[in-house]
Amino acid sequence: MSINKKILGLTTAGMLAAVLSGQAMAHGDVVPQSVDVTGLKMLGDEWLETNPYTPDYENHKLAVEIGASAYTQNCARCHGLDAISGGIAPDLRYLESGIEGDEWFKYRVINGAVRDGRVYMPKMADTLSQEALWAIRAYLETRTTDE
Image (cartoon, rainbow, N blue to C red; front, side, top):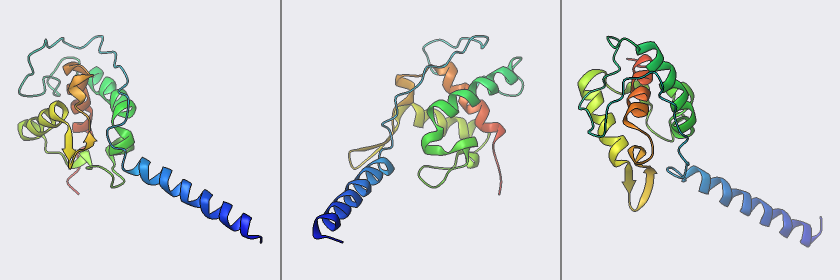
């Protein structure tokens, strides 16, 4: 193999590695997709302390369906399909149920996560409605595991 082909091969490999490493570190660069929350109770601008779309909610099944779709479009890239993380971001199946989990979820979607100036999770509440985010939480509660 000629020196030029070796250099080209090394350059190509280096560029590929740079692109892939950039993607692995690219938490928070996802453009949020809009979520149609038609049929859910409208919650207003003031954030509720707990998820209103619990199993007692009359349209819980619809909330879970909307949440599953919204999660797949907006969260799965980092947190994994069906909320099963591949290690890039927290595995949301282990998020506590009830008020404790709601509290953490609300804090994280409002504030995002930034470490050392890097966005690991965007402030999802800046672009998705409270209804869409609580619907995602309703979906996540169906994925909870104790394993």
